[in-house]
Image (cartoon, rainbow, N blue to C red; front, side):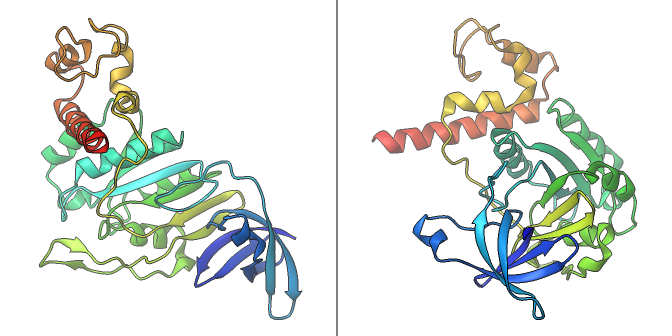
Length: 295
């Protein structure tokens, strides 16, 4: 039988099989020998050990179309990254890091700012302007008021989507609206630290309808740009692409070099200044890491 891993916890994997339902499985030891670990979202072949109790064993992992490290999920074709527009204030550096990670995996990203009802109109306009050139669809919703959720439902149809973002931004609340049977705890914002509790402790996939799946993943508060060189960073900022090759120096990092087409575009307002400042901060981080590597 063939199915999808919907959840993995404490060495058990819950595999959904069309026409059969959920089956609790363990992975054969051969996967450890191969240094393979099943991930939520994996397509697997299983053998049924007890049909009545719905227990089985994973005997084969099918090839993955994508494999994400954080969140650790497989076969995703788009990401819905959720940040709060207010309470807590969005950490745009963290959002930019996530966009870069998805870009490097060729996973399409939808940016969703939740809690629009708690943010000033000027702040919503500012956030929209910052990401207008990043080629990701930008949505403003209120999960609490159920505003904008139907548009998201349409964008998820026919896709396998990972939902990601920091804690306390309403990921689980939104998933409860999209998949009511998920019945997930939503958690309250800690007023003292202005952050949410990590209510989702493991990745889990839910079936919205035939051909449409959605992952809920643990919240994150930091992301590192692993295995990335400073020369590669500029290619993950879509706003820069039309200016590539127009700088005075070949291989321009768009930092301190003179006659830089990207910096001129920033000064002219064609590239948003906050996105460019985020780029420079990340570039500096990669440069410092390179120095430490060779010191």
